Image (cartoon, rainbow, N blue to C red; front, side, top):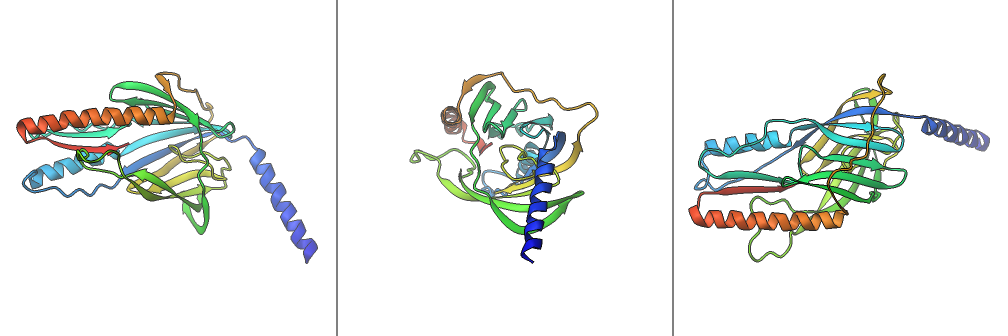
Length: 277
């Protein structure tokens, strides 16, 4: 019995090693969504205006991305631009999603543990270069199928800035943080450590992610495409690390809030919704 168990372990190890040694490359398409539940004072916004606002938010967060990947590298970028929300009449509504430019390109290198994120912030381009931090994934027992792929569940917890609707009060010095559980579904049929956005580090390609109100789902995978794939590192933008970029973004958001507060005092009719991207 011990010999049989040993043989099983050895065979499993050899099969896993052979699969991992294969060269994988492909293109995965992902769709993103974010659930938004916003309660507004009826004295500030009519029912019709509220419905229009929710439609604007829905379009803002429904996006499609492609992930070009090989064993060690990936490029994640938006493939099409949906209609951008616009102001509604004279109501002065403005929706600001920080760090969500259509020209954003994310390069991840899991072998050397670093990333490059070409990011547009309020019409200015930045190139964030920093270390990939390995999430503390917990492997769960659940499995499910996504398309033709058997997927396994993994989770980890992280602290994230609290989402807010509107600018911070004058008394707040920093944005409070809340704990968030990230749930990912990955497949061992594509044994690479890549995934959408900044998610990575599992023993197979991540096909689905749920984090707070945001969800990302893979809708299509093409392995070893006939025309091959292209993975080019982004190069445009002011070079900063993640901490420097976060400080710049916070400063820009505060400046914007001050302008919005000034406008509200002037006419009393403006409504701002700010959501961190």
